[in-house]
Image (tube, rainbow, N blue to C red; front, side, top):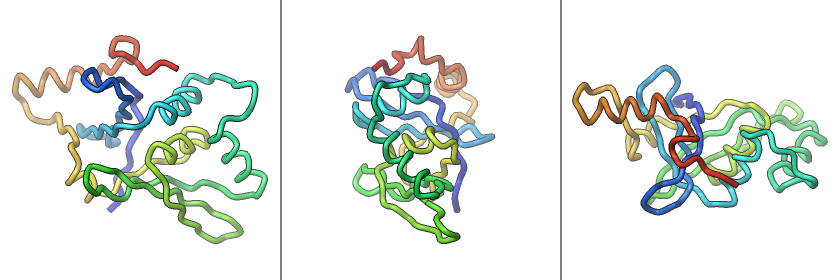
Length: 161
């Protein structure tokens, strides 16, 4: 089953100093952190911040090519987790045909933010992942819930380009 998620932002892991995508299940208290590479984080952050580059970046180029070919990105799906590595697919529509493209989650999300398509996570991935459920009512959970609900990139070591 596919679970819709919303990209809440990109933060820096304070331990590894690596960018982390923070995705939240729509209308739920479950968050999925996905560690990504610096270049992919830059590509996502540029679009989230509406930064215009003088020349197309790779994800912009790919998106532009798809548009010129009249292909439409319908959705992206984080569909698997193997040995702590997430996998994703980009679902395209071209001439009434569905085309599935294997992708890293970071590249799929970078395209999703460019086209505004929905992002989904397979429920089996959420079950196996280190997702954070903040629905429990204890002190630690309350602190975590408050932190995630108030996710303010400026205060949380927002990923900067």
